[in-house]
Amino acid sequence: MGHIGIKDLSSFHGALNEPLRLRLLRLLLERELCVCEMMRALKIPQYKVSRHLGILKKAGLVRDWREGTWIHYEIAPTLPSVIKETLVCLRSLWDQSPLIQEDLRGIRGPSTRRPGDPVVTC
Image 1: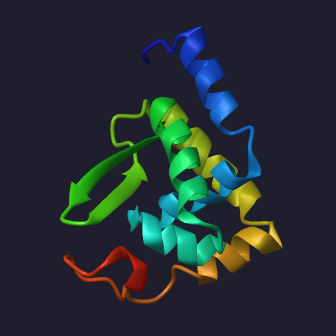
Image 2: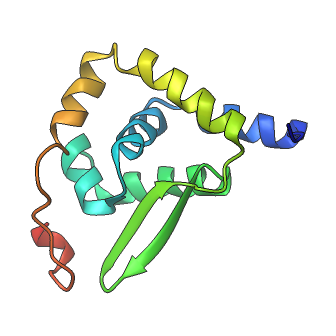
């Protein structure tokens, strides 16, 4: 097992210290999502989603990439296995929240977005 520095641990815990970031992480544990899908599921404006995703990205928990006008996010595949396992355990706890269950209903089903579509119509 590799070592995880105290700064990385502190960054991980700090990133989890906000309800909206917990909700975003829980959605991303389901699958990769674009910003507009997260906005729709959480019923919050783009600037809030982007700001909190930036914090999660800085903490190394998520990664992003661009596809045309879409910015996609996913759980960082380079996370240490112990952090991935921790997120899986936390997932069970987070799933007890009625708000998180409502969020998840917002992303279930087929995606309606297509590359090249304007973000506002997502």
